[in-house]
Every structure is written in C-alpha cells, then in structure tokens.
Image (cartoon, rainbow, N blue to C red):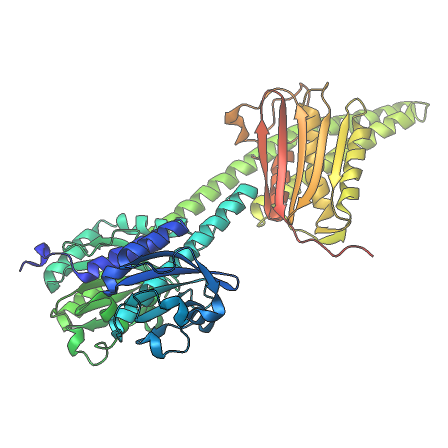
Length: 576
C-alpha cells in the first residue's frame, strides 16, 4: 500500500490525544480528553479521573460500561487511587478480590474485577487516572505504558496551565514577564518555519526512507515541541504540538547527543522492549541531534513509521547528519543576524542619545550659568550690600539646579549605558521617606495642595533614596502638568508583598499616543509655559521602578491622571 494513503494507526490516535492533552488550557479540557480517549487507547472497559483534595480522593469524571463513583469523595487512605498517589507509582491489580488495598465494599456494586491506577505528576501527585476491566486481567506492558503516557501528558498540561494562570495573575497585578516561556517556543516554531529549506528536507527524508512522518522538533529538559512536520499518513502532530518529553527517544538524545536509529524495533535488541516504540506503536525510527555552533543542543530531526524501514545504513545516516547540520547553520545565521541588528540599533540609539545629551544639557545649563554670572558680576560691582544675601541665595539655587541636572544625566548614563540603575537596599520606614519627599515639594510649591495617604509596615527593604527620587519625580510631574486648582494625591500601600505607590493629579487627559512616549529620555510634557528640565524625570523614575522589579503604569482621562508604581518587594522584620 502507498505510504501516503494508509489509514490512521493506533499511534496516530495516541499522538493526537497526547498532543490535545498537552495543549489543554483548562482542567476540564484535560479531564474531558482523557475521558473520551483513554478507553479506546488502552482497550479497557472503564476509565476514571481522580483529583487529590487534601486527604480525600475526588472521582471527578468517568467513562465506563457501568456506573463507578463519579462525584463521590473517599478518604485517600482507603482508596487505591490514594495509594498510587501516596506511593508515587502505578498500581496494577489483576484481581481485586485478592488485593488488600481494595475497599471491597465500594467495588461490590460495580463491574470492576481488575484495574490499573497511574499517578499524575509523579514527583508530587495531584491526581490519578484509573483503568478498569470487568474480568480478572493482567494488563500488558503497552497498556500500562499508554496509561502512564496519558498521565505524563496530563502532568505537562497541568504544569503549562499552572504557569499560564500564574503568569496571568502576575500580569494582572504587575506587568508582563516570562522565561522558557510559550512566547520563546512560539519563536522557535517561527524560526524553523522561516527556513525555506526545511520543507524540502522533510520531503527528501520521507522519499529516501519510505517512512510516513518526519519532523524538526525543539527539545528541552522539559518540553518536546514540533516546529515543522510532514505528515502524509496522518499521525496527527502539527507545528506547535507537544508530546510528553519522558515518552520520547529525543529525551535520551538530548542527554548523549548521538543518533538513534533502528529498522525494526521488534528485532532490535536495544529497543524491542523500550517504552517509546510500545507506547506509539513504532517499528522504524531515526533521529539526529541538531547541535548549534556554540555546542548547545537545540533539538532533533526525526522520522518514524509504524512499519519496518531500511534506515540503518551509511547513506541515510549521512544524509540525516548533513540535514541536521544545515538546519543548525540556518538557526545560527538567524541568531547572528538578530544580534547584529540589535547591536546596530543600540549604536544608533547611543548616537542619538549623545546628540540629544549635548543639545539639551547645553540648553538647560545656560540659564543657571547666566544667573551665576550675573550675580557674580553684581557682587563684584556693588560689593556687600543689603541685597547681597538675596543674590547669594539665588546663586545657590542655580548651583543646586545645575547639580540636579548633572545628577539626572549621570542616572541616564547608568541606566542606558551601564546596565541599569544600581540599588543600595536598606531597612527603614518607607512612610517617613515618602513623607519627607512630600514636605519638600510643599515647601517648594506652597501654592499647591499635596495630600498623602500611606498604609505601610514600619520597615521595608528597598533603596529608600531611589524610591524617594522616584516619588519626587512623579510628584514634580503632577505639580508641573496638573491642574493648579486640583490637589495632588500620593498614596502608598503594601498588599501581598506588592508595593504600590500612586500619584494622582487633575487636569486634561494625556493623549493616548503620548502615553507610550512619556518614559522616553528628553521627552518633555506639554505642561505650563516656562517649565524647564532635561525631560529625564519620568524616564529615571521608570528605571528606578525596573531596578526594584516593578514598573510604572499610567491611566488618564478628563478628570484625572494617575501614575502607579507596582513592584514585588521583600518585607523586612518589624523594628523592635
């Protein structure tokens, strides 16, 4: 029969089920996929999904020839599911009447005579999957391994779901972030899709070997992700789909970085009893590691088939090695291109920054220098008079202003060229720190009303000077650009280790298009005429926020504008 027209195989059904479980984005979706696919995959007469709830086992879903225990909860100490989760191993009971772990009273009104129970997330079980038979029966190894593969897929899906929920909560409370993230793996899929040679490579692989499925897979310690596939016989994987890493041979290749190949698993002494061929129904297999120029293992180029194939020969092995090297070369070239583009963009930004620095600093230093020059000339001309203290005070103010401009420029240099603003963390009363900032602004702007509401513990571990600088910049921005008839309000509180400091002022709404530019250096707001400054206040405030692991959000409408800092902080012990 033509390789490309064969009907679907048990491997295809299992692959689709595992991929669907791994992609699930809700617990209900995970459970439903297991419920609808496990019986046909294993060949049993009943399946149950059990969730661990403290010391209880909750039978949340089932699919069986007769009623089991759906919706009921039992003490884990009397359930075989509880035993499986407590001992972190699969329980196989060929005859329930002879096993002391079975609560016979609960089974007496069911069809169950034999069972197998596999824990989900074996290292710290949170659930279990049970398979049941109506006759005494010893499951074959492949049936147990299929059940465990479903449990492994559920583990992967639950871990993904936990990470997704955690990230969503984190973003809702703070801001976007991630690592080994779904975005990175999506980028890997996109990078491989952008390599024009890959479809041709996969087509040549199938024509050369006579096999029915080929793929380029991204393989990490915890993930197996299909990046590009050619699947003419319908095994069921698409780009972006996942398999449980523990169920694949690529996981072993990641460790030893050697080719794995066999013509027929049934005749191969090393792989005829291996769990992967049994789980997926494989007969022939070849997988070549993809190693980047820096020695990093990236993934594999693999081909599989449920029938034997002649692949363990020098010609095929040499071609696979060449193809894997070609894919690695393209990945390296794309990385080098992105690095070069990033370096070029950084150099362009630095050049623009230098030009802005020279122009703006020269302009903003002109006025205080002129004031000092005028004051000095007057003192030299008039000598000491009754007006001399006032002149000296004005000159001192100009010097202070110049020092502030220089400090801002130094902070800019540290933020843009030195890897970010450094912090000196100390334990102190943050409410006192912020109140001092408020008092300074009240003295400097006696015509403005500034209110403060602080709900903070007596001691917090932050860089108090930098937090004061950030708050001062936000308050100065509110005083400068806010409506003079409306009070400025600063609030600060700590909830669930998230520090929040907000500054609110009245006035017109900030145009939506300008909000994204507020934190760029040398960008001045459209405040009252005559306002001076380098346009670095909000930029430096945002850099201080980042240094503390947070960020500043902006909301603005016709009634008020609010700048809000949020960051996760470590609370210090209370001061005795």
